[in-house]
Image 1 (tube, rainbow, N blue to C red):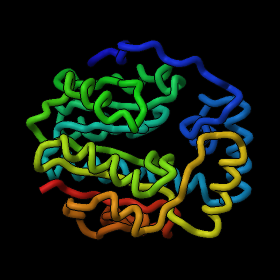
Image 2: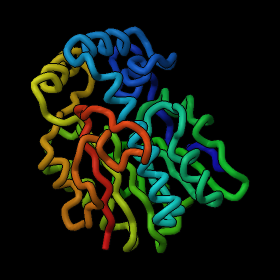
Image 3: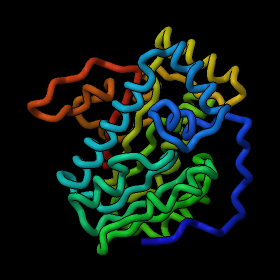
Length: 266
């Protein structure tokens, strides 16, 4: 187990402005949020009644994707950016269930997540977890610190769930993914999902931006698929997260406005 990154002074927590990690926590019934986050969550729920179910579905997708990568693809290193507040079946818990020596680096830019990061730093004795407070856009800074834990010569699974929507430009979001993937060894993977474009999600996006929070931009299926340009997208492709390899014997849940994919770097 490693300690959180302490190479720079974390910013003060502004409780008057909503943050996506805390809004998600409020929607899912957590306790690590403030009044501004709760207000946005309620506005969001009014515009997008299925939002809580969508977030639950994206967490389930994360679990299935990490299980596939650790159990079936043999991946032992995970870089989870925009990890959000700890919940059940975090990346390290799933990965180390199948690869006891797995190394996981979590990255987020919310100081509240930093305060709760000890919950993310549990690990098997053989494995390692650590936490970095950096912004997604700081590719060089994130990787410089990540390589202190991860072996850059070995494959890494890059986890970008519910974070690329904060980039106003879909092209810029794809460029960021490409910048990270360019530094990862062949055989590395990308796991990503974001809110798909629909009338409901567009209305929710507008309400979220009007609250003063950092805007979150919904994407078309094509825009999300473009984030994996140059990679091998695994079946079943770019789909609603409930449709990505549902557990055998379990009922397939209805589609939600969360679109995801898993792709491999050749």
